[in-house]
Length: 145
Image 1 (tube, one colour):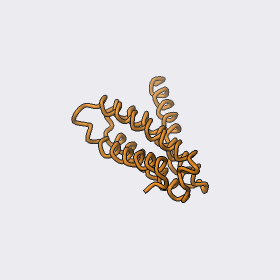
Image 2: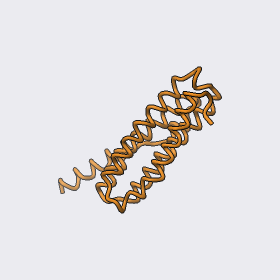
Image 3: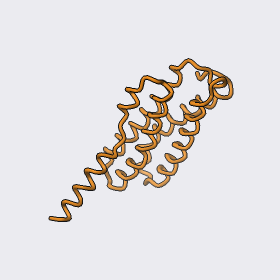
Image 4: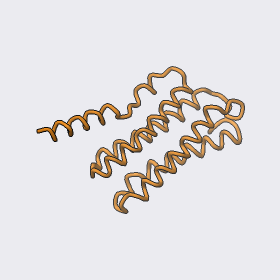
C-alpha cells in the first residue's frame, strides 16, 4: 500500500509541474506574453521526453503540439507589438536565442528517439525553425515578415 501512495504523490506532483499556456494568453503585455510562451515551451520539452520514456505517444504528441503552439503564440505576440526588431531588439533577440536553444534540444530529442517515432517531432522542429529564421531575419533586416 505504501508504494501506491508514493506513486500517487509522484503523479500528483508531476501534474502540478505541468506547463500551461493560459497565463501567457492572459498576459496583456505582448513582450511578456512572448516570454511566458517561450518559457512554457521550454518546460514542455522535458515532459515530452519523460512521456516518450514511458511509451506514452499520445502525451508526447500533445506536448509537442503545445510546444509548437507556444512558439507560434510568442511570434504572434512579438509581431503584434509592431516594433522594429533592429531598433528594439531586446525581446526579439530573447525569442531568437530561446528558439535556437529549443531547436537544439528538439534535435537531441529526435536523435534519441527510435527511427519510427521521429515523425512525431519533424513538423514541430520545422515550425520552430521557421519562426527562428523569421526572428533572425527581423533582427538583421528589420520588421519580421
